[in-house]
Image (cartoon, rainbow, N blue to C red; front, side):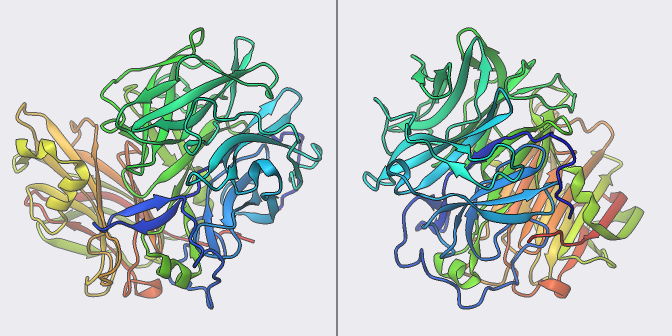
Length: 577
């Protein structure tokens, strides 16, 4: 891969996402923690297990990773990485570069704990380009181990050599920290956002909490060193717990795919937080009062019932404006659904999901997401189908591609709503995830379930179904449920195998539904109806691995479904040096 800089276009944006580590609670639910595990944090795997390693998703050759970043012209990826073990601890900021966000070359670590203001950790952060094309990293430093997970302050770092496009050396000035937790929770004060500029001031957000109240504090500065907290929080909500990774950015007008720089004026704005207690990524769309520095969401239903980037295994996300292609890119992280012992045995933990382009839906009610086009350069052998009918109970294998490493894009159609099931009013108290568990792929229905069976074993002892199911509500409208169900994904009884789901807000006048899934050994990323609803599942099959994995389309509803069009490609592995 040619990484020579062809011009002086080197723009930066950087976000370090919070350090998270998988554990299980007593109910079998994956939790996250900043807790150091002294018995594991420096344990190297005797042999790195490759069976669940992804081929075209970014992940470390060994040990533990999370946090995506971007930096100017070359794309830069800074990640929090444990060079000594596959769990949280010994964190440094690993650094990789790319020209396309698909092929990556690793450089030496960019930041390591080395000063009193980050002695116990260089945690999450972001970056901003100051006038004169000068990047500045903002990051959370931990100065004391107590109270857990640590006493947190905000620091900055600058390149040692601005002319180096690889940004291989970073300096942490001695006037750090630039923000101390004054009248805020000292152990819940982290993740400074990308800054934006208006009315003569730079603005940034820092995530926090006060008891159960989640908070995003707003800070202002004229020189990017001396910061003052605004009198009012930028946003807050009782009962939501710690807010991590706050993100705020402008949008182009409805239906326009072009992205905007963080300091540009938008017709609408997105404010996003990562909810530490529920592990959900929630966002709101609204208006921004530039004078009062207040965000006014269009929908006030609240964070817990609000919009989500992804209804599956997706956390600690960050967006950035790509100045080269004028688009906004969303990075997300997927943790492992394994135990600590299994992560140590694998020798690695955590992957970055495929970068997604995001823009405002024509309705103005939500965002749309789609994998960046650069991924298509990895497409290899192709399989194509048209106008194939699936009756109730039909399962058809898609042969001729590498089913464990594939990109599948399918359009389903149906001719009638006559067999659609009524939506039970008692389901209103359940989440879409609960409904997917109740109405799984094996539960016969009227209009659905229909979709794909990814990572399926030869005799279907294992498979991960991604499917739609349509219901008719009491007011005679239709409700589309999309599910990605890991429950039958593995014969290993010890794995965490959740069913994920979300509703798809769409018009069914054309009686058509579209699904695209990226399948990569232990991850299935699925995009419903052009990216209106997205669900990511981590799965660990024991039989459906490598050449023993299969791909099917299926219908388990009484209404006949037509596969109007199906394109499936084998995906080649990119450069990951």
